[in-house]
View 1 (cartoon, rainbow, N blue to C red):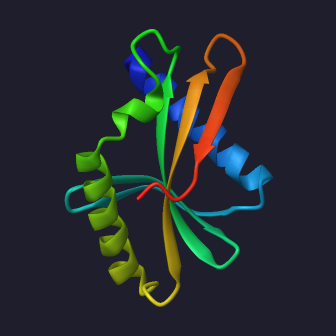
View 2 (cartoon, rainbow, N blue to C red):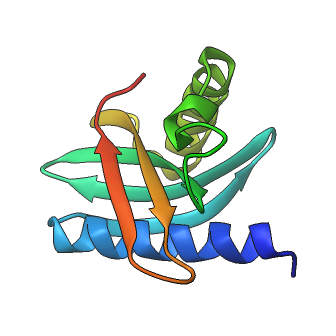
View 3 (cartoon, rainbow, N blue to C red):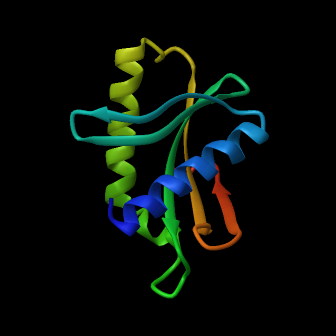
Length: 118
């Protein structure tokens, strides 16, 4: 497995633990839709939360949040709708969040959570 893939998986695991510690219940991970993947699907306070996780070893080439472009947000909204239709979960509230994980493989990681990005 390539180092970037190892870093990405590690970041998703850290993000899931971070969410669980904050009272979120993880209901899905790495869900594949027809046009992409949802990293984490969680429930929190009656809301289904779709979480995009961006992991970087540092910020030398920009902050991980910068990778979540308007185009990426549109794709995430479509995937969230697809998941809701499949899971028959459309009757509740939904939200898109992004978590940035910076570092983590060789030392401590910094985790930043943006709620309601799209």
